[in-house]
Length: 160
Length: 67
Image 1 (tube, rainbow over the protein chains, first blue to last red):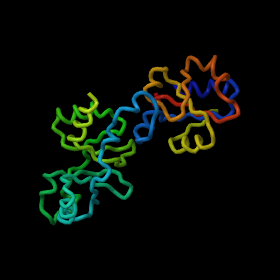
Image 2 (cartoon, rainbow over the protein chains, first blue to last red):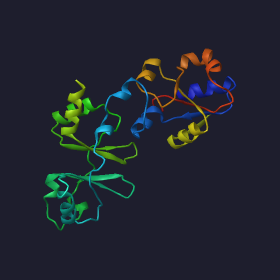
Image 3 (tube, helix red, strand yellow):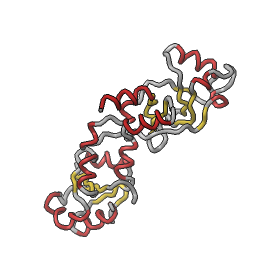
Image 4 (cartoon, rainbow over the protein chains, first blue to last red):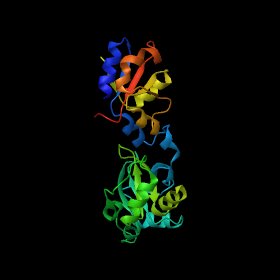
């Protein structure tokens, strides 16, 4: 639709016309602000915890476990230096042999949600599928934060 | 010929004072649109573009995605 609009504007005498081809979906998937009636409703990216602990593939599991246990976390997101998500460590993975590398211990390629998804919808999904937490990522795979089911359910409940 | 741009270029052009125009139907615009965007559904461009847009400014158009 936008290419037709761009061409038509040029034909009407607009000399500098640009087509943002990836569009609104790309903008929202990046977690950028929007305006409108939906903007007031919490979304996955708003509720996700941004202070989730991170680990790298080459880290030693025992070191990561020691580091995160002090903060009360039972989940760690595995990323590279660009915050691209490679894996996830939940309680089960964190309990493995301390000498394993994160790459050996992690749950690879976890399911993720985009930051613009309505929190109510995500809360229902996480409850139905018994998902305790899930990374929220942009369309290019970068971590926004970790959404905890208890947070999603609480915020969704506050909306009702 | 219109120039295809990505998200980072959108932000630079907004800083330059570009119009941002959503060409989706009005109800979709009302739910969510880019900050400061104007609503100009495709069917209204013919009759309203020249009236509401400044031809001396850059214009960015967008819809949902590449569809």
